[in-house]
Each structure stands twice: as C-alpha cells, then as structure tokens.
Length: 221
Image: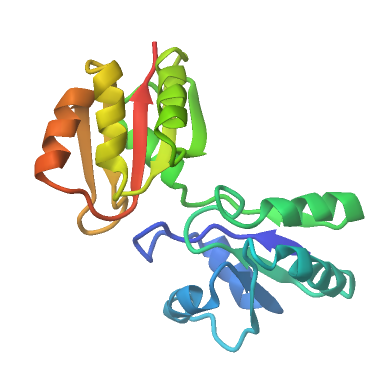
C-alpha cells in the first residue's frame, strides 16, 4: 500500500493521529527532501525508517522502485516538505503510476495552505480556484489575475515574497480597487493576514517588504 500523508505547513503539532500511525508503520518513507523531513519525523517519534528522496528531478527514476516495493508488500508513506503531497509538490505522477499499474493507494486528509488561507482570508469560499504559482512573467501574471477578477468566488495563488511587491504593482496599475489578501507564514508564530485593495496592499508591502511563505488571494465578481 502507498499512502500519501499530509504534513504540517508550519506548526509541527498540526498532524493527525492517523498520519502519525501510518508513518510509524511504514516500511519506508518517500520525502521531497529527506534533510527537511528528518527533524519532523524525529519530533513525531518516527525513527529507524529508511528515507528515500522523491522530487521533480528524480521522479522518473524513483517511481518504478516504489511501485516494485509496493508490489512486494511494503507499506510506503509519501510526504512533501509541507502540506498535501501532489499540490505543487511531488505526488501526482506517482498516483498516476499507481492507477496505471492498478496498485492500491490511499490519501490521508490533513493540513493545507490553500484551505487555511481561504477560510482565514474571510473571502467567499462557496466557490474557489487554486492556480498554483503565478508566472515569473509580468504579462502572464496580469492575465491570470484579471481572470481571477472575472471569476466567481475566490482565486488563490502561491507567490514568492521576493516577487509579491512586483505582483501588486502589476495588479494595482490595472485594477487598483481589486480586493486582495496576503496570507503569510500560516500556522507559524508570525502568521499574518493583510486584506485590502491592490493599491493599499502595494503601499503596505513597499514600506514593509514581505518575508516567508505566501498565499495570495483575489476576490472575484
């Protein structure tokens, strides 16, 4: 059995009892970055497990190894650096391979930066859209954000703190009154939600350069 196990997005205690049990009973654990995951696993009391890396640069080579181990009866847990495996992280290709090979797998519920930011923003959550990371190209970023403004509900993006001010500049120049929220460092000590128009948030973050992991939300029509 291959199990896809969500891990905390910030606070290490945000993990389910079921997730801990699956990790403790796994024969091996596939991690996006073994160096990043090792301290978390130690914190959870998960020790003595073989850790293997599974990331975008080695998925093609690693997936057949994991499938072969699962066929032999191993219980394999798959985790990313934070949150749900497969959401802008490794996992999707492995699930596709399981489907093609008719191998059993399970997905555990758990922490999600997308849902946490959506609810915490106070923006409409009856309909929402998650579009991953915004493009590094300003033109494509503007197109994506204009699409969000024209869409019913709320649209969420991941954004780099180094690029957030530039993104707000692009949006504020075209749609200064667009309603936005910057959800930062979710579940961590310095978690913040900044809500306002694109122009207001641009002014704030020009004076206070952002740090940490960011979810950027735009309220649609």
